[in-house]
Image (cartoon, rainbow, N blue to C red; front, side, top):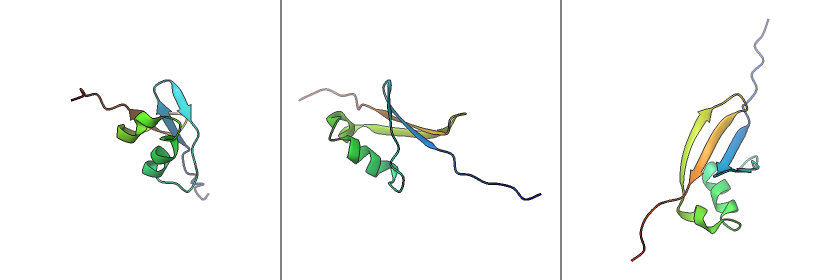
Length: 68
């Protein structure tokens, strides 16, 4: 019996917001795309992928720092 291999869906989270995946785009391209809606993503760090039951989860976290 041959194995049926299917890619896991990618899940992108920013805080409590689940961002839809864009097939064919890299993780950095996804972040750049959503920077138009969420400007703070331009300096966000990406954690992941982390395997979950729903798929491979990537989490965008705001960079914390001080001004000046």
